[in-house]
Image (cartoon, rainbow, N blue to C red; front, side, top):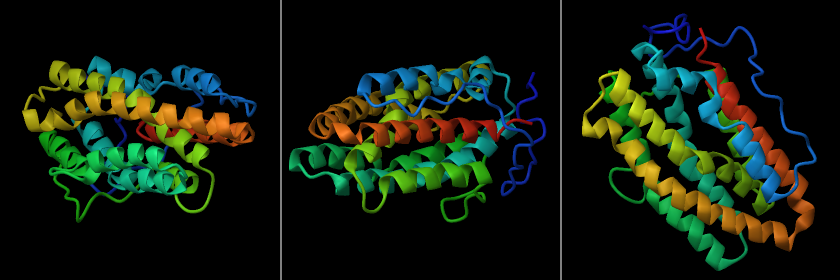
Length: 251
């Protein structure tokens, strides 16, 4: 039976109510986070699979309506993610480092179907009826998530904070994708190959992407240790934005 998660979410495809309270499940990391090892610890501490929303997903406690609402909101991030990768790419000085992010960007939208298109296939597999041309309106937490990434990756700035924002998510996502797919099969009766392809692709791709991003980020931090605090803050902001995004699906 579905839990309280999503019980109060409206059925209209374009409406997601804002959370009525803030859920501080984990304390924010301290601003002294400066090293890659500390950033890895922060990511493990606030891993998305520890969030109650994904815990409920893994146990089959969410309603399909909640999953559909989530799919519609997540699409706004997924469809913009190539822009965030491109922004980080533009900040890198070394051609060999840019090539690493270019491979990531090509994986995202350089082939058919693109990753946003695969996400729409998943959404349709659970009964969503919106399209890329008319997705659901972004909720406040969704706008906050996307604006956080835009601020950290797009436009002028240092490369390391942008890489930190990308890495904070991609370091987790292979595991998250695998667990989402498992839960969909085990508890929600979602078995169509097309509904799982997004997760299958990311279970493999994000292991490679995160390892490559970590290597580039390590080089940036070694070359400019003074950028460590800003990078740590970027990781912290990114993790906080993701937890707030998942909080928004609480009923």
